[in-house]
Image (cartoon, rainbow, N blue to C red):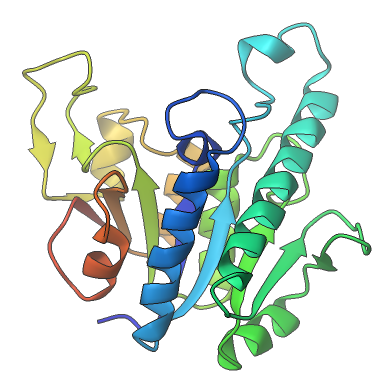
Length: 234
């Protein structure tokens, strides 16, 4: 269904419920799903979070300068990106990590035209270090990169199977949206993504699919057009 996608993975997801670090078994499962998407002929870019190591807005950073804490969070995303790159390359695929913070010995610098060329050549590209700026989340980075690489859709893989009126983990009466607009998300204050990311997608007509990555094969199903999760439209 889609020719080019931007997949947003949270750092917490890579911890697979352990709360900290990277679950080696789970990251290889994710890599296998990404390889399956690639095998369909779909070009795929990935933005990965760093919450499994450090979050600039978390309790652990409460006494820190926000800029310093955000920089630590960005560096955490690079750890996850390199780990995911390794898992993908073990499957025989070409993968590049591009960092918004220059670190030439570890990753390529993010250059939009080079990223587009990598995708056109069939390489998987992982965008690390967020936007390279403090005060912007990796959700905002995912929205920005999706627009920059001209992705057909932004795929947000979470621990919940879509967008609900409330947190379904704590409120059993929460109802799921099969489709919702960005404006409605902002009006209802649904915290699936931060408001900067939502506004960026809305203003640039970027559709988003929110779905669960707990079930194996969901990423492939979404790319093939199955109605999983919640579709967010401009």
